[in-house]
Each structure stands twice: as structure tokens, then as C-alpha cells.
Amino acid sequence: MQTDWVIEALSATHPDVDFIKVIVETSGDRHDSAPNLGDGIFVKEVQQAVLAGEADVAVHSLKDLPTDPAPGLIIAAIPLRQDAQDALVGATLSGLGDGARVGTGSPRRTAQLRRLRPDLKVVPVKGNVPTRIAMTTNGDMDAVLLALAGLRRLGEEPDEILSTSDMLPAPGQGALAVECRHDAGELARMLSAIHHEPTRSAVIAERAVLRNLGGGCLLPVACFAESSGDVLQLESAVTSSDGSRQARAWAKGKPQSPLGPARKVSAELRRQGAMEMMD
Image 1: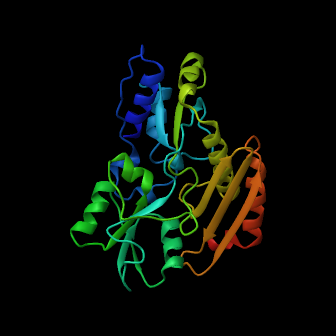
Image 2 (image 1 turned 60 degrees about the vertical axis):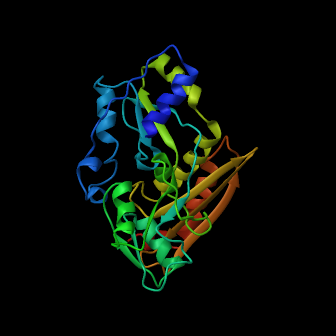
């Protein structure tokens, strides 16, 4: 669905160009135990297809993209981010009774949910978005916790959208990264038509915090940044797996210099013991 959106956006800016979708199956698509396979499991095969000339452009969920750049590739565009929040399907947070079963495959969501509602039973789940939604209708789960962006790309709406004050998202969540080969100059200029600079500034700050704290997209690091005018606001949190402890930090800076707030936030999280919470 996200590739279809990019094709639609590019077609609107370049109506004389035919864009053809190329499907590449990734390790994350092939294995139910995807979170256990390591960093970059949803992107590496797609990147290899571009490097091999089997495709010209790669479209990724930015939160799945490793913080280390891929040799030979550049991120030519980061479009406007739509939905960064997390959401509940099957019930609202206040509507869940003591001991209710909530499914998620994310250590970050698990930790924050346990902090919000220590009475809930958080259950690790696998599978794509439709599979997880089905768990709430067949009685396996009382609710599942998912990324709002992934839901809406499938035309689904949640029972509740969680505020970022309650559930900080993953770095880059809800944003897309559009990659091409580093020497594809004309193509890179074409892709820049769908680029959104305020989103880029925000996700650079978020991903810099993740990199400063270890770099892996599977770490329970939560970040959210927004640009408003000439101010970039960044918030980040690291929560212990049982939800009992949390390091949380805020900083402001200039959108043109997103690494500044990221350094301040990273240092404050470390000072509060974030590294020990991720052990």
C-alpha cells in the first residue's frame, strides 16, 4: 500500500512517466518470527534489488530502516508523514478490564503499555496487520496494539488512537523513505518532488537518538519530533521491559540542525539510566 501511495504521488508530479510496482519478498515477510531475525529484515532484499538494477526505487517504512546508510544508495525523498501514533483495535484503553489480553510484537509498545496499565496481560503476537486484527474478532485477544499508519494504509480505523504523551512512537514511525542508487541523478531529482523537509528534520532527530543509544530498530527507544515554523521539538523515552522505570527527555532546536536536540536528549536519557533499562 505504501508503494502504491508513492506511485500515485509521483504520477501526479510526473504524469508523462510510467511507474511500475516491483514486488520483493523480504525476510520479514517470509518468517513469522520476524522481530527475532535482526535489524533491517524488511528492507535488505529491497535495497539489493535496487543495487542489482532489478528496480529503480525502494520504498520503506522509515522505522524499519537501519540507522547506518546502505552503501551505494541514497534516501532521495522522505514524504510528508501522515500518522505517527500507535492505536488500539478491539477496545479502548479505558474499556479494557483488569487482566485483559492485549497483543503486540513490539518491545517498545509492551514496555509503555505495562507502564500505563500494569494490570493488563500483554501477549507477544506475530503476523501481518489483518492477522492481528482477526485475533480480536475470534476471541484470542481483547485488543491489539498497532501502528496507526499501517492500519490506515489498509483502510482500517482503530478503536482508539493513543496520544504521544501516553505512547511515544518508534523513531520514524508513520514516515516513508524513498531510496535510489547514489548515481541516479535525474531519478533522484524526480523523487525530490514528493520530499517534505519538515518531516525529514523530525525523523533525522528521532533516528539520531536511536543511533546514539545503540542503533537497532528493535531497541525499546521511543521518539517523536515535530517542526513548527523555526522550532523543532523532540521528545524521547526509554522504558524498562516491566514498565516500572522510564527515562524521558525533551529538547528544542532549529529544524535546520536536528542533531542538536538529539544530542541533548540522548545525553539526558543516558543520565537517567536509559542504557541499563535496555539490558
